[in-house]
Image: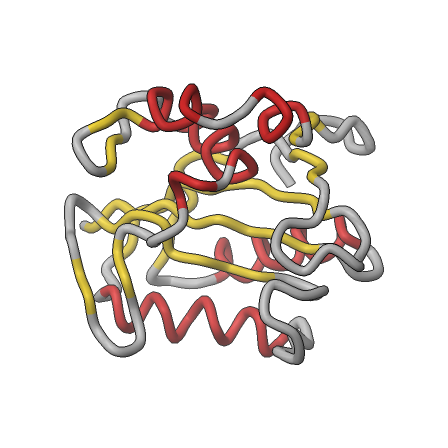
Length: 168
């Protein structure tokens, strides 16, 4: 069984609802088992700035899917939840990224594992810390990468209190 970490983000419409629906689709799959969910965090938009704040979270999963099949499954979730790819890093109903897949390092035309921008994004590193503080990328722990970011970047990621903290 493979262990993977996924990053989920949303900033259009019922943000909490989109995260819940994405997690429900993951749970309904016979090929995926959610092991653990991070807290949900509210984050200022990254990249394209003229948009609403994001809700972000990460999930740890076990799967019998290959990395490519997991990518197709994640893109299927985005399609079911009406994700439109109009502006790079722009508004979206849902984004489901593969962050880690076992200890695999993969560079293909469609997929890079570990996700190439994990170390730049406090909104990914902070929820990953909820799941597994021992994760490492480029010979540094995710905590060490988080400590390299500015205080401003870290402070833009705030725990979202608009839910009951039960797994969604």
